[in-house]
Length: 223
Image (cartoon, rainbow, N blue to C red):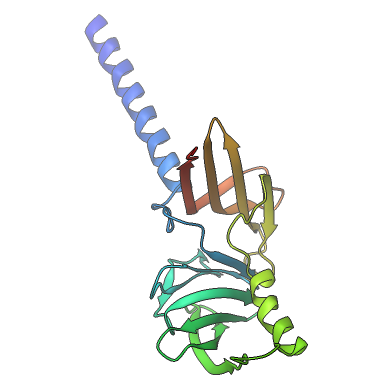
């Protein structure tokens, strides 16, 4: 009889462990997309876009639709290196340098949501940013170039702290809200940046899904 009770106790404990493990797995999915350096990151209407600074890094878009947070979509890069990006409600625009020609290119992508179908991202057009090779740059062109750098700052930038950016215009998800959570610290000689896309209940009392986007730890080097 004692053995039977003990067996039941162990069985209940094992079931509880499995339940807790499953719940934790449901809340956190996958590995961070960027672990070496902060990418450019901007939030649009129902999506988050990221672009790496490495040569030929793709554009990564995570859309949120009727089924919630989609798997990341990758779009092959244009040119060689991203110098900035900006998002609107349904578009993503990059500032890209083509090393061979020395030109700055601005590819524009459309983010299209269709009910009951996965969100699609496609390139709509490309435009050159014709900066003069000699002499002063016209103010309008300087403003255009600066708008990319400020409109699509590197994830975390130079800010320290804990903050959120709301993801607006998520359709057909009336009971959920979505935010990008940033945590940037510099303690004990180690700089740490963690960026996570969160799905929460409307009252924000419960996180139902957590998708890691960026996780970087760098030890400060003293000369």
